[in-house]
Structures are given as structure tokens and as C-alpha cells.
Image (cartoon, rainbow, N blue to C red; front, side):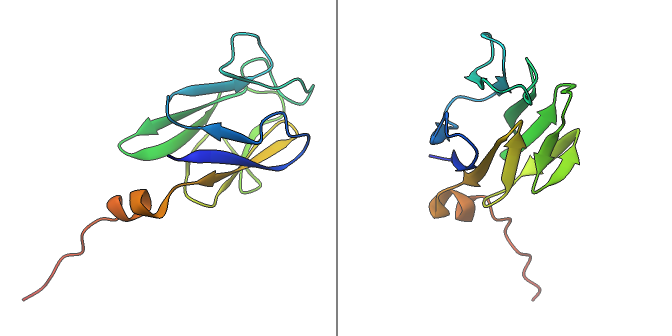
Length: 110
């Protein structure tokens, strides 16, 4: 099962399962994954599965959403990429069998 592993900051969550998407990250009690840090907006960002790709969308956060250190309004999160929400950074971990299943088939020329 794909998951986000905490790699930096106060580990409110050591890991977050990605079994039920979409997930909204934020400070609000209504967020799916809640952070108690002032750098995180009430509704900070959303992670969803679109065409078998993990897509992150910033929800108008004050301090931005980062993928591998770059601010994004929307972007794809791949195995090994880092997602920063407020002061917390997570790394996407996708099991090898799932990564192999997502590889496009190469065309063969005869």
C-alpha cells in the first residue's frame, strides 16, 4: 500500500496510509490529516489519485505546498518525492510491485 513517511519535523504522523484518497491536509478539524502548526493553513492541500498518478493540489495555503522543495499549485508526486506541508515533510513510498505495474509498455519495432 502506498504511504507517506514522515522525514522531517515533529512527527504528528509517522506515516500516512494512502488507501483512501482524496486526502485533505490542514489545521482544520475537518481536514482528513490534521496538523497543529501555524505554518499549515486550515485547508492546506489535497492529495488525490488521478489516472493512477498521485496529484497534489494547493488549496490556497498561506505558506505554500512544496514538492521536493519547489512551491507548486498542482503537481505530481512520484515514489521518493518529498511533500512539505507547513513544517512537516513526507516522502512518498510506493511498493515496487505497484511501481512496476504503472510502467508504460515500450513499443517494439520489428
